[in-house]
Image 1 (spheres, rainbow, N blue to C red):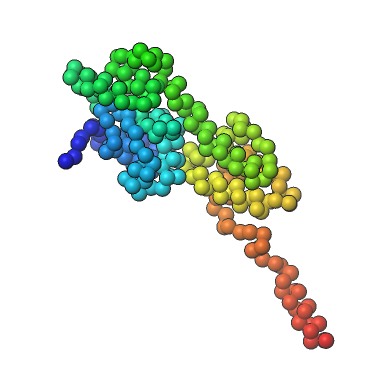
Image 2: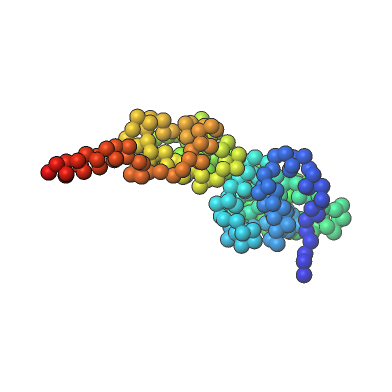
Length: 253
């Protein structure tokens, strides 16, 4: 039997923010989170990555990217990666009633929320604040920390791959974060890093192997779409001349 928790209005599809700022993947994944079988009347619930993969047919990497975009770009959800808890930020505005019994049900269900800041957000929407967590809910799941996860992991990968010491600072993170916000995936980033290091290592171009160069808007798009090559696979422009030379001297011998 179907259980209805989310009142998803048809106006969702004509909402200006959704139409102008959300990619098609953003929209469909957000609808999935709004209507997930794991959802509760609080708008906060736990769902594993394996369950999301099964439900949506998307890869784990794609789901991570979409969660990051909904948190850091669109600001419509919060996500605690340590326990896989999702919070729909405006859930109460569209799904709660003024019924006293309903409000009691939300308070009871909120007791099951694991992340203190998420619980605080839910109770604050009801006009209450939990005595054990009076601080702002954002402190329990710092969106800045979540937004830095992917850039920091890619910078660390560059350091290990090339023996560099790039720092995890905003000037190095911002290009990576911007490319992710444009819809590129973490796999795109790792592939570009590996490819450019293989091409530039030991050449005069090695000095350009840094986050700022690789993730500059015009550069990254070209690197992502460039055909994969390796130094060993590059055509030898002198091969034909050498072949003719050998044939000539063999005939002479």
